[in-house]
Image (tube, rainbow, N blue to C red; front, side):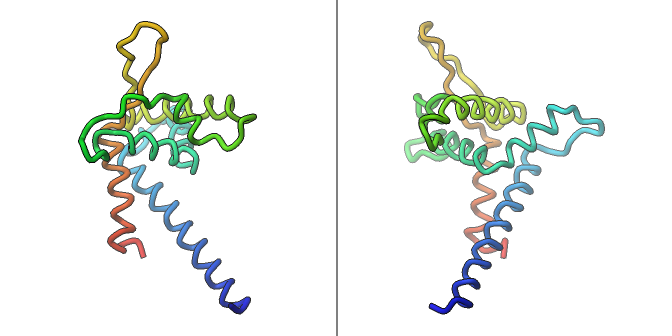
Length: 153
């Protein structure tokens, strides 16, 4: 393969990736609504946080375990902030930072009704299971369908 042809593929890849990122941001804004006239710093921070690639990864993992995406229509009962952090941690040394980051993503997603925390039935140890909401399902479904039907090109 010639160098020019290879660079053409590389450019096409990055254009596609930028388009996907922009479209995800647009879908997220549709899902969470417009900012109020005088947004708080927290509202602005939550939006910024949710558009980051790792936050997207966290939301996909939560959505994938939700009743909306599973064939049997049941909710996975083992999805916690800790288990999601384990799934997205790249290195063992970064695990504690990742747990904190995932917690912030979940807080932001909860503020926009994308995720809810459900207290475990057991008293000890206290755990909260993560549940994807209908809003999260709409976000993930609409984002994927835009690319599957080719309407984003």
